[in-house]
Image 1 (cartoon, rainbow, N blue to C red):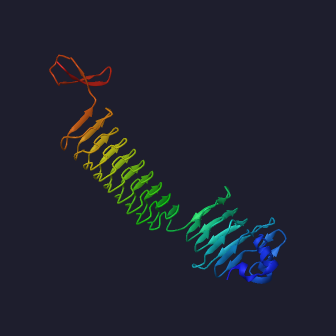
Image 2 (cartoon, rainbow, N blue to C red):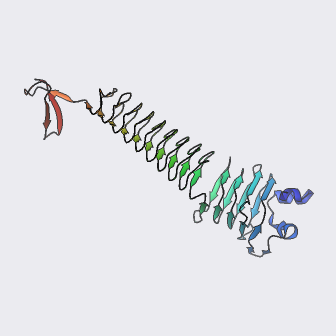
Image 3 (cartoon, helix red, strand yellow):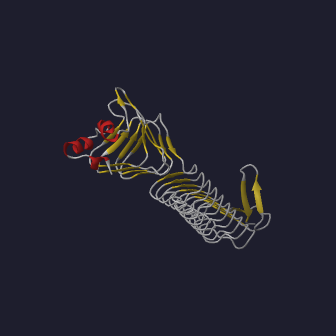
Length: 312
């Protein structure tokens, strides 16, 4: 039963106005109130607050601690525009779920989960915010639902399903499904589906679908679809589709649709550059100069550090 439902009439109104501590001694007998202090509150069941007002624990200058020691204990607050303020510490071995403002001036320790929807979560800068879910961190709606040890998921649906151990997903839907162990996805939709272990995707939609093991994609839509293992794509839409394994694509649109295995593509032309087969090198542009050493012969200028080809 909730605190509010234990009370009636004027008492219920007083509870809604945030003077909850007046009732702990007389009704619940779980706290000892003294001038300037409030004793730790230890409960064996859920704390449930259902009210349109505010609930203050440790108010009126008093510093206290709310502690729920049972592994199944939860702190659940269903408030309509109200808030909860703890001047002392809050230690919850279950879940913390709250729809209003949650202000903690001491240490907040949530060994289960922490959900604050539609409002603010404020922690005193000198205090600590502690989440202990196999040392994993998840922030955002549906973030890190199926998280591995020491994984990090920040953003709506980031690392949502089967995020591997030590993986990092930052951004909406980053690393959303089956992110591999120690993989990194930063940016909206980066590494979204089946990002392999130790792969890196930085940029919106980079490495988005089936990024291979150890592959690196940096830039918007770089390595977006089926990037091969240990390949590298740097630049917008570089290696965008089906980049071959161990290939390197540098520059916008380098190997956008075709980058064969073990190929190297360096592009600064502004148009797409494709490979013509495996284990080949493609560079665009290279300036043509009439060196008189034979058409097509490559010439390097050690003064200007320029590579050109002879047109004569």
